[in-house]
Length: 386
View (cartoon, rainbow, N blue to C red):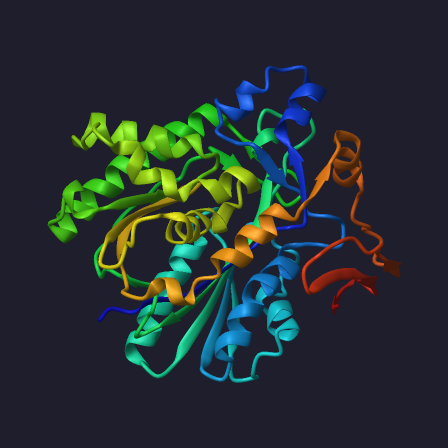
C-alpha cells in the first residue's frame, strides 16, 4: 500500500454572495459569471475570519475523530500569509492544542503548495509508518472591487490526515512536473489584493498541463484510460472543461464522456469560488462525497497549478470503504446554511480595513466556525475558541 490521504475535512465561511447580485451591481449579464465562469456564489470571510481560523476549523473534526498524538508535523499551505515570519501553522497548532512534539511549518507557492506538502508528508510517513502528518490548505482569494477577477473570489480550507495506511486515497509514486518563472499572477508585499493577467494565466495553466501530463505519462507508463475521474485546480469551475478540451487537442484524450469525468468534482468550488491552495483538494473532497458511483479502486487524475509557476500531474487510487470516513453530510449542511449577503453588506466587508497601527483592537463578532480572529494587541494577532 502507498501512503496517502487517510481523512479529509472541508470548511468555508458562513457568508456568501450570490453572483447574480454582483452582476447586477456591475451592470453585466449574470450569465457571464454563471455560465462563462461556472460560478454561482462566492464565500466571503467576515472580518473576524482569516486563514488561521479556517484552517483550524477544517482540521478540528480530524483531531476530534483520530486524536493528535501521532502527528509529527502540521503543514499549512497558503498564499494568504498573516505574518512575514511567524508561520500560520504555529497559530493553528495552538488553537488545536497539538502536542509540542508536532513540528509546525507554513508553505507557499501560489496554489501549488498543498501538493508539495502532500508529497513531503507521504515521504515522511513512508519512513515512519506508525506516524501521521496534518496538512491544511487555507486561503482567501480577494481582488479589488470592480476588478475582472472579482467574480472568482472565494475562501475556504481543506484539512488532510496523511498516513502510511490511508483509508481514502493512496497516492501513486509517479508524477509529472513543470516549473517556469512567469508573471501571470502575483501579490507584492505592499498590496492586499492580487494582480493577475487573466488570459495569460489561463495560457500558462494549459501549457503547464500539457508538459506535466507528458512527463507523468513518461514516468508512469499510463495513458488516459487509467483514470475513471479527473480533478483540476479550479480558479473557476469552467477551467476544468477548458483543461479537458485542451488535453483532447494536445494529448489525444477522448472527447466522448469527458464531462462525466469532471462533473462530480465541481459543485463545492462552484459555491465557494477560488480557494487557491485548497482548490484542488476541495474538488477531490466534492468528487468523493457526491459521486453516485462507488469509486473504490478507481484511479483519479489530479492536476495542481500554482501561478508563477509550478505545476504537477499526479494520481491516486481510491480505497475500499472510503465513504465511511468522509464528512459529506456535514459539508453539504455547511454550504446550505450560509448567510446570503446583499451587495452592500459584501462591499462593507471588503472595504473594512485591517488596522495597521499595532494598537489595541477588538473585532466585532460575526458567524464563524469554532474559532475566530478576535483582534490585535501590541502588534500580535489574538485568536479565540468559541
